Amino acid sequence: MIAWREKFRALSLHFLVTAAMAALAAAVIFLVWFPDPFQQMLGGTRLFLLISGIDLVLGPLSSLIVYNSKKTRRALIFDYTVIGIVQLAAFGYGVMSIADARPAYVAFAKDAFEVALAGDLEDQDLQAAKDPYRTRPKWGPKVVGTQSPTNREERNALLFSAVSGKDIQMFPKYFVPYEAVREQVKQKAQPLEVLYKHHPEARQMVAEAGLKIPEAQLRWLPIRGKTFWTVLLDANGGPPLAYLPVDPYY
Image 1 (cartoon, one colour):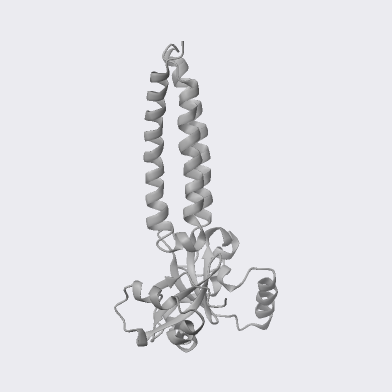
Image 2: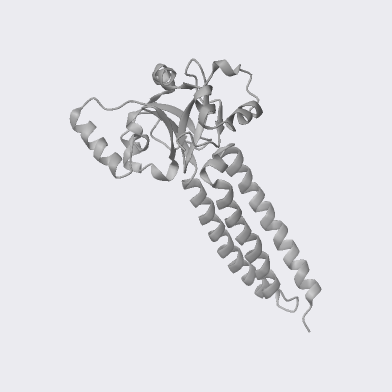
């Protein structure tokens, strides 16, 4: 006779352990790797829910299937060791996939901000950069500027690379401190009235952002992650203050 009560007790315990592991991963993912609102901008929430949801279902379900109090202690240890290894490997792979999809740099380039994902930065390109841009940030995205090459051969190479989808924000050797491009940002940023003309719904979003700056002192520029959003700045070209889920090009 199947001891369902014992099986469901084992399932519940396994679920709690798995949930604790998922909660720890969620703290790192959403508080460090994908600070608000990058989880929405880049789809981090959906990816995490998919991975953790599968883990929370399949892991405890395996306990329901294999647990049997009549098994020897050795047999149960073997079963749960196999389950643990498979579950940790799958969950670890999922977390690493999320780590690759995290925003590493928010780079101002020409007339917009570009989000460079950790997985899009190649090791060889990082090695070609200067400190502190030779690594993928582990504690959230860093805001930087970019400086186009002055060498004609490099400019042509970058142009052809951009055509294939690898633009300047994926080459850390062209990164510079944000302060170095602040004047360019100031010149390119536009008044909010320009945004409101095509997206009147943005007015309410700006009000809800809770910024302690008068609207007359706010400016905006596009930012591209998975899709285009809008970034709010001060009139002096300072770093991003807030992000709005509005595609200014649409």
